[in-house]
Length: 133
Image 1: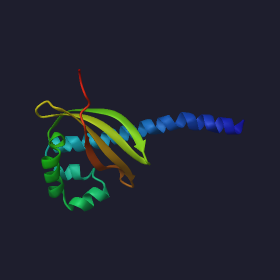
Image 2: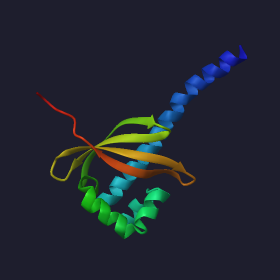
Image 3: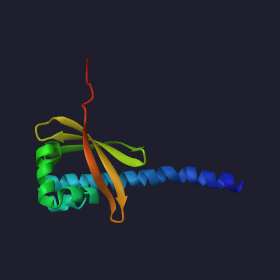
């Protein structure tokens, strides 16, 4: 009976933990997107993982990469959080962004949990889904 009760408690608790993680992850991504819109690269840099910081060395290099390689992130107008999923132990948050000219983009944010909280460990632009036909 005790095992059943513990299993029941765990089954109820896991979705709540995942929901809390999802909210925290959305807050991190949303805050970084707001920082880019405000052109506050220093603030956006704070949401990058140690690996990303190691790759770019300083906020200016990071900001230049985002501006040139991810213009829809640099100039985002509308943000919608889609599904959060785990693949091989890594959490990925799918995000739909509208860019400055109205185009829609789907991106996948790889997230890691650090002592400082959730941080962005990489972003991949996904192919646009087929619409219509």
